[in-house]
Amino acid sequence: MTTNGESKFSYLLIGLGLGAIGGLISMVLARKETRELLRERGRSSLDYLNEQAGKLRESADEIVKKGKEFIGPHGDSVKSDSVAQKQAFREETRENLGG
Image 1: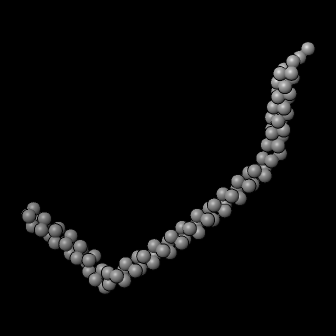
Image 2: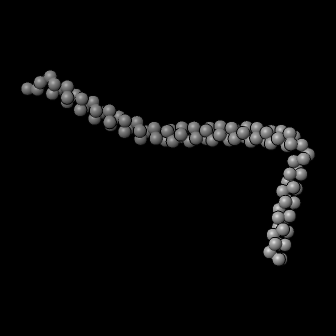
Image 3: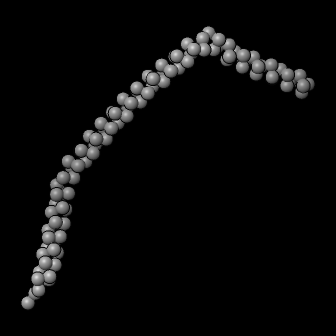
């Protein structure tokens, strides 16, 4: 004769077994749909990231453009000054080395 506790335990084991079997069956049947869902979400995430990257690129271009306007026409002279300084440094080192 089984006690009330033993019958509850056997029902628990039967319920766990049926739940595991049902979970495995549903997993096998839904595997294709799950992959398609994950693929779709991945594509939408990639599209969102590409859109955000485009917005970031546009704002960076605007910042660079405003920076160039702020510096004005003298911005090119900074570049030419650094080139002239490099050339002067090279000539000075040649003179000092006897070349």
